[in-house]
Length: 411
Image 1: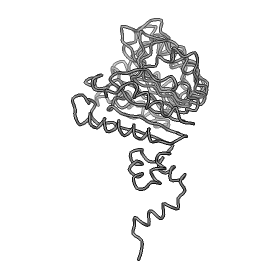
Image 2 (image 1 turned 120 degrees about the horizontal axis):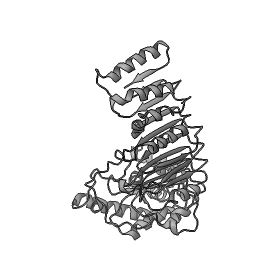
Image 3 (image 1 turned 135 degrees about the vertical axis):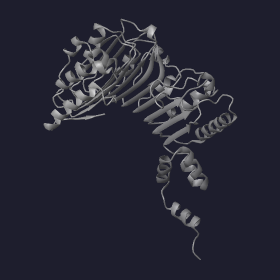
Image 4 (image 1 turned 90 degrees about the horizontal axis):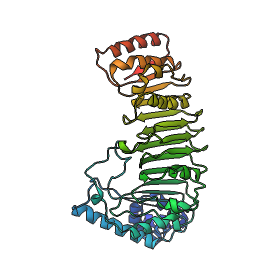
């Protein structure tokens, strides 16, 4: 009599080494691996030794307050995390991900468009000791390389100091309302192997916070920061290893300081995205290896000669770029005659995207940008009326340049 399908599966499983089973379970989502582990004692033992743990409880709704279903769901999630961590026998952990409390991430929405209806009362009511126990688990294992924390709690405490002394980390992503004050009280900390750092939703109170953080990451290649700067603090970043830099700078308009400086020295940078609500002055070293850049300067920035010099400083630093996007006040500032005359030559620029601006002021700016971009292939700009003078100007340009086979215009 032949074997049943379930018996065949069990027999086939028995021939697979324990280490390979553990590796297979490590590739599955933790909740799926937990279900698979119910099939046998051997699977349960392998599950407890898996090298990756990802806990994800992200309900579609943002607000859990007074919602019995979401409250019950979180309690089940909390019990699941506790049970897995308490039963885990893993010594080596490569990746740890913890996400809960709804879709609160800034990155999950259009920038600065987090739902205003979601306040502190919407976040899970989880004790700080419980949060610290969860975060501390991967830090107690050997060789953890990646930690990702995305959650906001009702009563936030501070991040554990052990997080900033984990020398094996290569990737660290934090989107949480837990405090970073612990860095200020630490005499020293270091991330000697950290290559990717992502910080969202944090509040920066000290001028040297970013400077100190980046300087203690000697091999950092990617930095993403979407943070709130208090009292118009300065930004100073210097790193020879950085290849990709994304900065979203936010602050209250009345807190903007004329003394605030954005100083960036990342000479080997390849991609640079900068959304500014802060700095009045810039000091940016030339980026010879730059491939792509995007500037979204808010209309909160002051106008006049100082703002013109600020934008021109940025453009000169990225004049070697191949793909460039200019949004908001960037275009407004360049409408001034003096600014247009000081534009750098973009010798390598092949793709240029321009943000919205009044049609009457666009033509001269764009023509000057075209004159400064000898190898431009693609020009993107917002929709315009079919009867707009701007459209006729560009149709004329298109016909002339396409006859020479040099460029095309995209809408």
